[in-house]
Image (tube, rainbow, N blue to C red):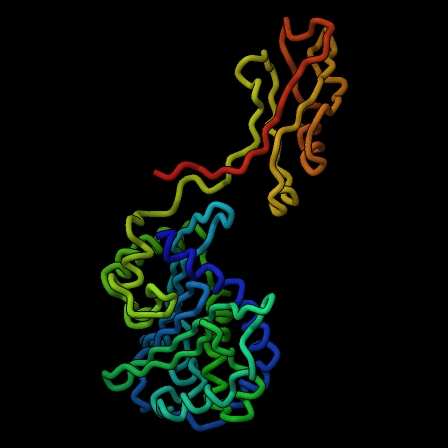
Length: 348
């Protein structure tokens, strides 16, 4: 599933900028819901597909609205290890129309498209003179048995929507723009444990491979020229191919003491990879000379012979907690190397 994900992974970072824009006009967006909502609007359900691989599905329930939250969650960014998570909650004493905050079944495609075109910024997002960024939010509403789709997107240099401009042009369409953010914030307050989410996520992965939410992601693939195109096979069949449950190994490979098997350790403490070094992608070996206390085998001094500054202290902290058995101390310093290497757990 990694080739498809790698093409879309930039969406997560880019969407943070988008959500910041939405948050700045949240108050205004909520005012857009002043239009009367009618219980008999014909809205049967809706799905919101967000660019960070979050899916929100709302359906009618006996006591209100049932909302299913599903997400392909990155549990190890460095190694690209993901897990499917999902759960369902019921929001009582509300209707689908109230939850949507906009009349999904009354907004026409021409009105929606015109408002989006007129509210786009005057230029694409530029980095070093090159257009960049991928963003995709889609709402698929089922109205009297027929699907209606609304898509906010930018890629291939297409300018993003300016939420303030959209609010001025059409407050109802602007309310659709912030709908996914509002609904997610409301639902995520009820989230169960990650373990429970991943158990349910495994079941949902099978359903999605079988076609659930296929319409919302039908054109979320890229063709030979780097343009968005229809997914064949369907998007989630590609992304979740071979997914049979959450990963059992998630952490990157820990630092390795090269002499671990040849020295007579009686107490060994695993060195910890400094988070700042991992974030900065600093790797390498730290070579040390250890002086031992002859009777106890405790390390009483650590001299760094060679190593990257960001890694030295982590190696020193671990070494000062080690103890060695008889024969390790001969009066000469003990040479030990800690390897801080880039690496990921093996995939089954």
